[in-house]
Image (cartoon, rainbow, N blue to C red):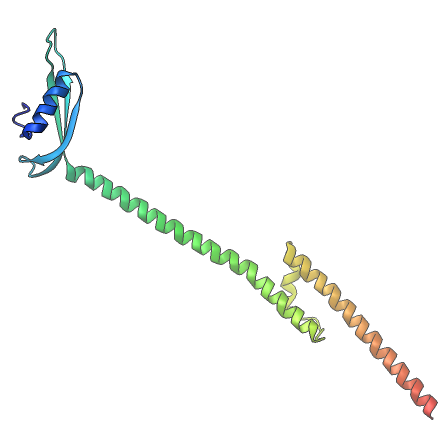
Length: 171
């Protein structure tokens, strides 16, 4: 097909002819009557034999075809991004719960110890099985609970002895 059959605008035809004479390719997006829509048109210069003026090879690609691949790629990228965000969100929730729950439970244990409610609670034994900082803290709290329990017992024993001594002196 000749350049004139491609229905180029006059300005585009002039640019095409100049580019081909200089041995350069030429491309543009323009309406195609044959395709009844916008098309990407590319012209390449070709030399045969000893001619000084090149022939041209023209390739016309419908923009709908180019756009369809772009839209499909865009959909894939968006879907992948959303899936990635969902996975990251789930991981964040999992990790936050894994960190916050032991800290919250440790706070509850400390509140109990603060009010001298020192009996051992089986439901919180899982805190000491952890091999991280929370587990270290829970084991230290267990040691503190044992020490406080021992101290309270000693104080009760001393108070009982003091009471017995006071009663014997009073009698």
